[in-house]
Length: 456
Image (cartoon, rainbow, N blue to C red; front, side, top):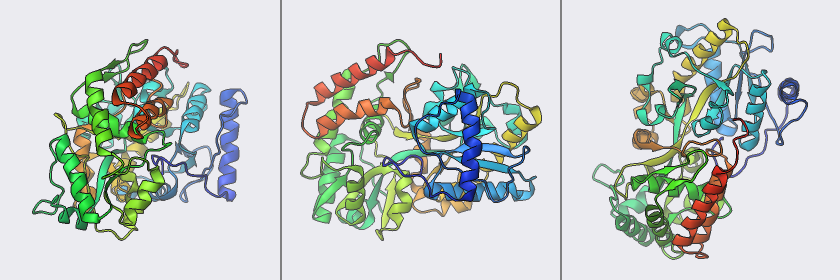
């Protein structure tokens, strides 16, 4: 799984993994003058592929359940799903995190990159300006049935650099709420149609936590954040976007942050996770375990936890993150496809890369089974997606998606998220005030903005 906070170890090696690792090692050493970034690798070749020069090379970071679903999608397009011509695909899987993005940059800089690669859309600002990824030909994509109109504007707007499209979104994976339907009904939080009622204000969210605690006899809302490098930022960023205030990271600084709005958000976070109604000291796995064992009525998590939660036996519901401030907004990211830079790409091969991306998008109903919202909107209109429960109940989150502010040092798995999380953690644990936490966040952002972009 590529977005989950706890790190996952590499898959156990087998002969196919070892073959792909040797091939990857040769490419990466050539790209980086013999230096490899730290971090274990794993890879595979799809069952329908061969390792010859004609194979379309694909890098991604999808492991675990996501990796198996991507295998299924690649197998479908390789054999020519829907009557399309098939592909010969050479897939390489790398561990997700900073090392993945280092290796991707090194391979592109060395001119030995894969034909297609996966990238979190929030990381594009660190690659497109430096020429590490090549632009997509939208006319060519349209020839294969994919156009800009097939994506929600909130996500499509982040695919461009200086007006040119450099990424094609596969999904939207938002930070949402999961809830125990039995507890939520007892707490009076479900509509007549069985959906979570709108909150509308901070006070309503606080009252919902108290009602859920009363219904479960234990905790109301669960949130794991201790020692985590992203969770506090996900919660803060989504709530801050709901205030309508600007959070921008202009090159050279200073950061544009509305301090009053930020204090308002952190204050709500400390009131919500007060250590009484809702625990304030859980780590990620602790919150997950508490929710799956029925010791809380609601959990604030990424939608990628859906497969785990479905195994718990809970009568599980899900909804976009509740709007409690003035504007609808849900913090999210997007697994996307990019074309790593190649000095002299073969036109026929580049055409096949576009066709491959288009055909994989058309298979994203399979991808939705893990909880991800397909970015390719025609899939959402399929009866099969409407039948997915609870996935279809939070699909609207894609319409109000908010990603990290664009800058080379921000995005999924970044040091920026980690440095934002540390003062937020201190505030939630009661070790500092919301005002001091926000001042520290501003200082951290300003420090990062003063660092030179290593690719510029």
